[in-house]
Length: 65
Image 1: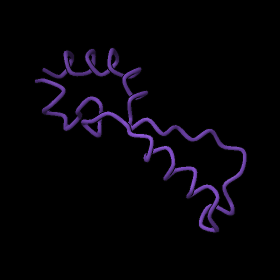
Image 2: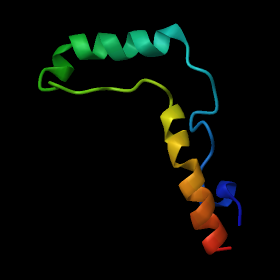
Image 3: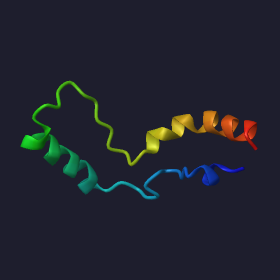
Image 4: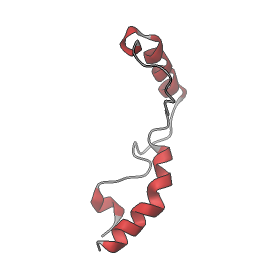
């Protein structure tokens, strides 16, 4: 069994971020839609930091292969 069969791709959005991706997040934070968002760290990386889970996922896949 491979990670792809678990439905996980890396990076999850299959692309490289663009400046507009960060700008969109900033615009949302400045909007009324985000009025109750306080004290948060918001990652705008398309899931790239999910890569820290990759070694663990490899072990899980190996155990269930």
